[in-house]
Length: 110
Image 1: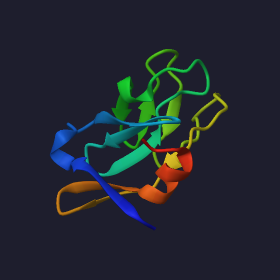
Image 2: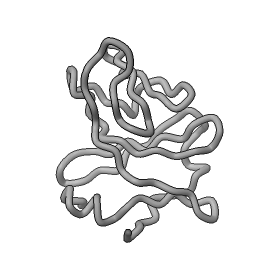
Image 3: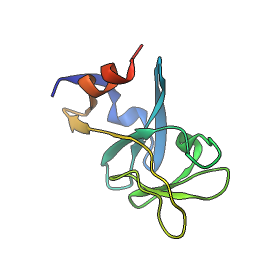
Image 4: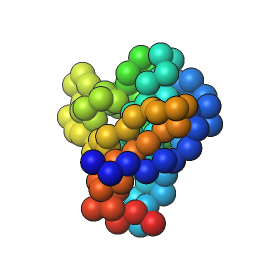
């Protein structure tokens, strides 16, 4: 994998998110309470809500529009909801967040 530095871990509050904009859409980067990072497509498949504006709890995020809950590791909707969002490989190194650049480029990163 080829990795791209997208910013400092401290730029995202615990249980918060930031957005990386690409030509094909936005990627939401989440920081959990236990300082893990996850990256998902920022668009809920249900009604298009921005997941980056959702509530992060554990390793899940709840869409702000209709309360669909997504697993941050798999992108799979939880419970009775059916759907999935794309996930992107993310890691922390030296206090910085890195995303898989090859995956972003295949998506058309700007």
